[in-house]
Amino acid sequence: MTPRRRLALVIWGVVVVVLLALGIPRWVAYGYAEIGVWVAALSTLAIFSFLYQENAAYRLAEHLMLGTSIGFAIGATITDILRPNWWVPMVQGFETLLRSPGGSAEFWGAAGAIFFGVSAGVIGLLWYGLFHPKTLWLSRLVMGIVMGGGAGLAIKQQFVLNVPQVTASFKSPIVLNDVGGLDAAASINNTIFLVALLLTINFFFFSFDHSRRVAEWAQGLLDRFPVGLRWVPALVFMLFSGRFWLMLAFGVFFGNTVMTRLSVFIERVWYLVDTWARPLFSGVPPVGQ
Amino acid sequence: MIRLLARLDRLDRRWLYLTLVVAVAFPLFVDVKLPSRMGHEARGLYDAIERLDSKSIVLVHSDWDAGTLGELKGQFTAIIAHLFRNNIKFAVISAIPQGPAFSDEVVDRLAAKYGKKYLEDWVQLGYRIPTSNISQGIQSLSKDFRGTAPTEIRENRDIRTIPWMAKVSNCGDFDLLVSVSYAPYLEYIQFGYEVYGTPYVAGVCSISTTNMYPLMDAGQLKGMLVGARGGAEYEGIMGLPEYDAQMKAAERERKTRWSDLSYATKVIKSQSWAHLLLILGAIAGNIGAWARMKEEGKKGK
Image 1 (tube, rainbow over the protein chains, first blue to last red):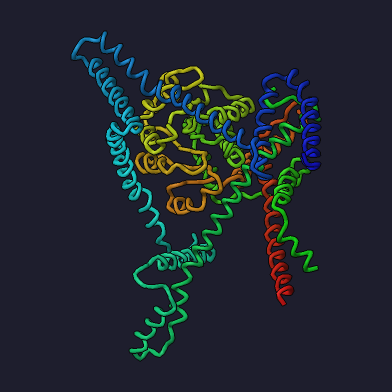
Image 2: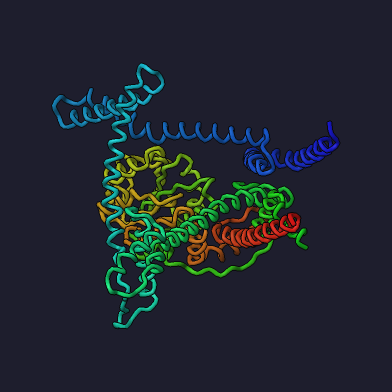
């Protein structure tokens, strides 16, 4: 064992002893509430240890997280969705069917509940056809239903969501205020919006090459007429400035991404400092006590 | 000097991580006041709730958990505080299994603050929309609310037996649809706003906001809270930071845990320090890269 590794082991040993000395009295005093805080804090530290280097503690915490979240999701889906929305109405349907007179409204209502319940169960089970080559075709049936439904929703979404946005983009570059004067701020905003909109749309006009050569070719066409003006710089600007607006938007996306990622990090650091470490030294009870 | 600066380019990134930890933990120990002003996005959401009266009912879709708590807990807290303050009844629903556990903790604490009671002023409908199929789930909820969320989850009571929920059969029976989630659920616009005309507002993570502005422009999204910033703006208007400061002092004397009803206000302080550090890091990194190139150029000669 190298001296450096020996030193690291000694340091880790001291850290573990100190943590146990601080933790055991609190585990005894506060029970599961405190143990829960410790599990969360140590799991967070294990995940953060990846920032130093890949290690076994990180992998353990990663697998624990995946296992618990999947297990929890399966349990919650059964108790909160399948049971109240599928199983209970179907069972109630059978009970009602047996006690109600045939042909009555109650009878047909119960028959409908059973029909929908059994159909949903059978169609849902077709997904499991994926697991054997001979039954693979069964899963394609249910996949077709899901894809058809998804495509229908997507088409509707195009009309319902996107069309109002297109109409809302028809803004006037001149905005008047309530007393009939010019609203300068709104007018400038709308003008910038319109310029950005047109130039960005122009950038996605792929019918011709976006290069200076094209601008010069266009200038060549113009030169056949006695206009006498040089349009090349303006055309080049138009061809390329769409990219400027797109880069501006990507910058905003990136800034917002950093903000979201930082918030996740901040919450975890706070948990470690405020919920786990600070009570150890200040003697306050854990959260929930 | 150039050699010294060039070392910035070779700085081990783990030092940056350590500095970041110190920067984000700093506001926990030193309280720095930062000015906050409500933006037009948050104002839209605030006004949408202000327009409601005490007979109104609101559907609050709460899909935040440990992964999004940093940005969304503050938003959710401020929205619920606003609903309670204005005596507006609401139902909470979720499309993630762990959603109800997170939302319950906040609503219970606020219910105690405002003297509100479960079933009389609010209900928890639980995890009713399957995570894997949110589009169809919200569509189903919008058209057949009772079929999708037949009972509340604490006492397992049929929602038809709760007087103020008895009339709800689809999304049109709500006066406002609110979601607090990673990204807005456009299905509420598609099946709630466009079909029944029920206005929709959303609290979302910053990462999802950029492409939501056209929806606000078109009036499809009436208001939006943008990450921790939106939450902090709303908390400020609701007076939650002041309430928190009072609670903190009182509870510290009693040596108990203090409340955190102004979570976003605190997050935004840490975020400001972290942003400052990142800007300094970017400048230092560029200086380092420039110095290294200059140093290598000298060696080349």
